Structure formats: C-alpha cells, structure tokens
Image (tube, rainbow, N blue to C red; front, side, top):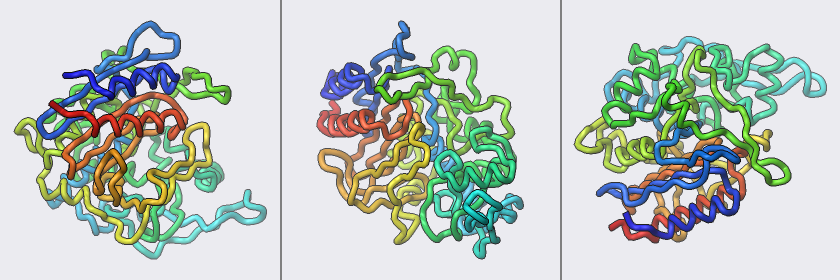
Length: 391
C-alpha cells in the first residue's frame, strides 16, 4: 500500500495538535487502498495509536442502527409509514413543547402531537425530537420533569418532548435511539445481540460493540477536549455499561478497519466478501432523499464545549436519506453529489460515494465536535483520498 498525500495529511494533523491520535482508511470497490495511524492514545502517553485502536464512534452508530431497522423493513417486520406507537406504546405519550410559563423558567407548556410518529420520521430526524445535550429548552424541560439526560442511557431519558409536529422540519435528536428500541421490539432481541448476529459477525467486525470488552478497553483511545488556550486535556466520557438500554444513536465502540467494513458493505450494495446482509434495493433506498423538500439546516448547539455550531458545505442544500446525510452537489476535489455521510461528536467521520465508488473513515477522539482544526484535517483528507490512485 503506497504512501500517498494522505500520509502528509495525518502527519500534519499530529504536528499541528489537531488531536493526540488519528486513524484514517479509504477503499474502493476493489478493496482498501489506504490505511494509516498516527499519534498517541492520550496526551503525553507513550503508547501509539494503531489501526486496531478502539474509538467511541458516537453518532456514527446511527447509520448502523438505521441499517438494522431497514433490514427489518426489508423483512416486513417494520413499516416506514407505520405509526411506531403500535410497536412502542410509550411513543403515544410524547408531547410537543410549546414553551414555558412566566419568564421562561416556569412550567412547560405542552400539547399532544396531531400526527403519529413513524419510523421514517425517526430515521430522518423529522420526528420532532431533539437532544437535551445540545438544546437548552429540551434540557430545561427534562430538568423540570425530573428526567435524566439521554447520556445516562436510562429508559426515562427517552421521555423527552418534541419541538414540532412529526414531519414538519429537520432537527437532530434522539429518534434513532428510539429506532434502536423498535429494532429490539420487532426482532425480539436486544440491540447488541441483533447487531452482532445480523451485521457484525457476518461482516467480520470483531471490535464493534456497545459493550467495552477488556481487550477493547486496553486499546481504547482516550477522550480529550481542546481547552480555551488550545491545549488538549484528557476527560472522562463513557456511557454506563450496565444501562437500561444501548444507545442506537450513539453508544457503539469500534475501530477504523471495522467501520470501513460496514461502509464497504454499503458501497457494495449490501454485501462484502460474498456475504450479503442487506438487499441492494434497501441500500439504494437508504441513500435516497427521504425528506422531500425539507433541507438539513446548519447544526445548532447550545453546548459549545461539546459541539460547535457548524454547516457542512455552506450554501449547498443538504438532504437526509434513511440512514445518513446526502450532499446534493459535487464537492470540489472530493465526493460526488449523492454521497452519504455522518460523523460522531468525538470527531469521527465517514462517507460513502456511490458515484465515484469510494468510501473513507477518519477517526479522532477530541471535543468539541466540528473543531476548526479537525474540519481542516477532514477537508484535506477528503481531497487526498480523491487525489490518490488506488493501485
């Protein structure tokens, strides 16, 4: 595997303190044409980051859970337009948050939604759910009602309010955590078991799990955060291992090579190494606009220590498929229109480019999401992937 301009991107990322460590991989339909690791597992650590280092992939979990739900749609066990309260009766109890009495710190004002929440709404972030981690009104409601944050992985955390009628607009939120619950209900298996049986084991993803095994823990890259002075500090950031539920929207641990096996399967229309886990028609549907004229807005955040407000490809209309975001125009020097992408809050990224037949994964472990140095590295990495001759 020849050294390329991608090597220089990774070297520069470490030299400029973009993150303590970084892993990058790229593939086409013939196989992997780049894989590399640079840096250390933690600030000041001696141990190097390696290809088998374990990362918190956070919201890159969403594409996997969405694929699981779509497999059940494929099998007729879930319906995209089916009211999901038929599967999870708790969804019939959600309310829309209208505001707060008094000066904004009083009793929440709510009403029942007029439309039923469907699986399509949940998979496309058009259900009305948001994140208490990023939206101060949702956080205020949760505090008033004595509800725990979604980060606790407690069942009561899913009783968050909607911000609007299902199907009305796009808002990043806990919909795919709910989708994980629906996968469990429709399959009769816990989400971890279902994913292991239907995706991870067949695809050879040996180091992907909600459960941090001892051998994975020894290879875990430290969670870090950039400080106001630019220094990088180690932080504690782990989801409970004995939680009520596994977060289908953000709880997986994985490695770069493992996640690339997942994206290569999608690039291959649902199969990898002659093992099929999804029908080609299902993969095609996952990568098509599923929200009509609704546009994906810039990502908002009321918590800049965790995520900086950010817009992918400013000025370009973005859509959402049944698993990930879609760019509607070619990116200069990079992916083609119709590529599929998402990221994790610790600054892990992937994309799948069906037109140009490439897929790539970039992994770091540093907050906040959308850090300026990280985005510069991501953009340089993408250009280098397309400038590299695979073989």
